[in-house]
Length: 390
Image 1 (spheres, rainbow, N blue to C red):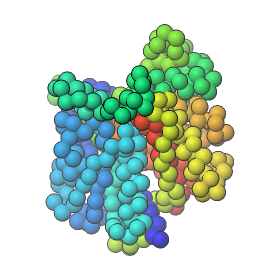
Image 2 (spheres, rainbow, N blue to C red):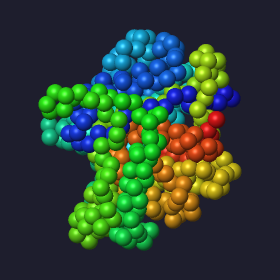
Image 3 (cartoon, rainbow, N blue to C red):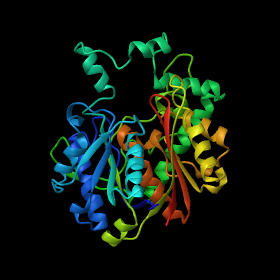
């Protein structure tokens, strides 16, 4: 069976809600990333056989197949097809899996997996809230309500349930949040993101133009004391805004090819897709599926946790990576080495390929071999991807 290789990876720097990227239409922003992937590989864009794009808020400016809109906005040939994927927060990681499966099957040779989310212009929950406001019902069906009576599915409640289940204290979560922010600060100041971030032109309120190249959510003046002082989100809870991922605007993508695609493009691969897993779990606690997902991926590959050099575990809430560390026994120094979503932002559908861009570049910068990426997803799902740096 043919193998799948990543030959280019790109992302925008994250933008705060109503921040520096808020003036960009999401299709245009994603189009910038698609164009950058073509530039990085020198590919004839007509060679691209599909674009698979993750997006959670598929409504309004992100509706009507935003992936196809991004292809047209990028000026790619009209012959390049595209489709939009929703696996909640794992949408673009799933897009990567679909793209890899396509080239491994030999059905296609060159595919782009990408993601976009403008959480400013299409607020979180829009695809559910708008229909409900217009009398068009809810995704929660009678059969689901019968199976889960009196349950209101909530990622925040799931995060609190994880903290309680795994015995995590507020102090642990605060310390984790502080450390991930400090890693993001250090990585930014060292230029660790330079090769993965695509500069995006932005215009401020006075009309001055500049390039957006730094993740806007990083707190450069943060302190542990300040984090500890943030008010709890729930009176009897353990999480605060400081230990939760930041609302974020952004886009990201990777180009994935098989051996025939490598020959056609004439480029060297950055990494090889070593393994892909997706699992389902309890939809109520919702966010712990990365734990069994990681365990399954390691079992299927015959690898041990110490065989993995670097990990990217999405920081939807601090309780997710802290619980994951406790259950997997992974080395904390290998986790989210350049910071995570608590500091850098979590642009929902764009986060999967965003994390992959960061993981690949971190492996290359450190001369390491294997990286594992996973994230929790609404509905109790999780994708796991293991890559080998080449």
